[in-house]
Image 1 (spheres, helix red, strand yellow):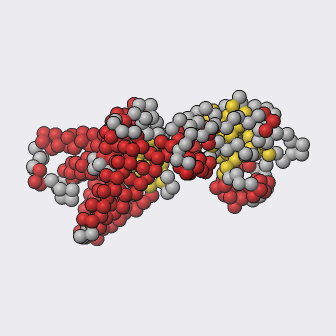
Image 2 (cartoon, helix red, strand yellow):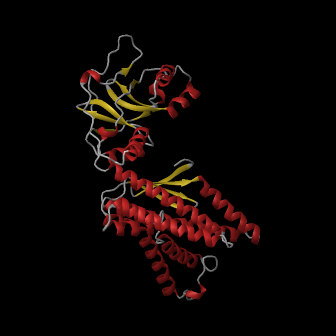
Length: 391
């Protein structure tokens, strides 16, 4: 995620912090100091906020570790001012697995709240439920209240909260996945309308939550529709077959001419007959700004290139492309690159199938060897792909 920086790696998962989180800490500390004139009060507020987001981080690890139990890796976890985001490689295929993954986060907050409660009782510091407040009392008492709030808020049956996924998983046990998502999204939008209406009477925060829920429901419905549309499709069904492979010793000036002569925007790069990386427009333009048009592709390309088989499920290949931040996935067959899966091509396939009512498509036959796309080389007399590009 843009404007985020890595703060560590815990249990094999990278943890990132969005820079606006630091702004939030500074704002809270400043407002507390302005209101009380006490540095200690400002420090307590900052520590409380850090503790709150520590609970949010543990919440996200609940999701991530439960997903790992089902064989689903987590790309990373990012802490934002509005909460945490654990990016799973994919959603669980079985509704019961999604149910447990969704419930794992709130379950962590329940455990934290119970631990704090028992600690307060055993230490004799428990003042009763009436005295609890998210803004008053000791740090641990406030964290107890916050964890209870996180459980209740996240279990609201609306996307993108965990309760929306719990609802979808429960519905998917009896309904098709796409329909279950549409029903859950509709319920979430209904809650958004309710929040927005109540917020009109003096609670702007509810209006912000309403917008957050509405957008989350729309995004989840769109993602489910795409998953349903691509179900059963393979990489060969979406791959780009009219493309060029660059060599690493091309100059950026030559790449510009290739870019302008066609519509391809992402290029795999070969070096010594092997796939060595990929070059997209961001790397190309940054390279032109920093090094000029005489710089070589190898100096600015992104090392490594994701590869897949033509018969790999399209959903898995799409996950590879997303994990690579949109870079193309090379489709390899018998050691030769026969196609590219790009986000643009996948989006076009989705639009075509949506326009056709998701009618089945015939899979295109593989390209014959004499029609494989050429490697573009600056050396005179360079031939097309004659060697193999092993996966």
